[in-house]
Image (cartoon, rainbow, N blue to C red; front, side, top):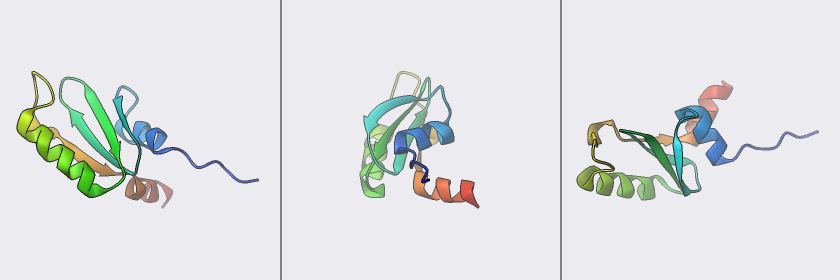
Length: 84
């Protein structure tokens, strides 16, 4: 019997935390903005996530934005770390 592979969204929820709000997308790279509300989007490549992060760092994510707290998580690497 084989186990079903968890989705990237499920992986992100486990890594970031349940109160995080999902903003869309799919892929192994989560761009996280933990300012007023923890919010994340998923991206197929690190370049896409980094491009979005750079834009949000410049423009802000909310009224209480703290750009230095924004980060990107490689959920593929996070999964490997959990398995070892």
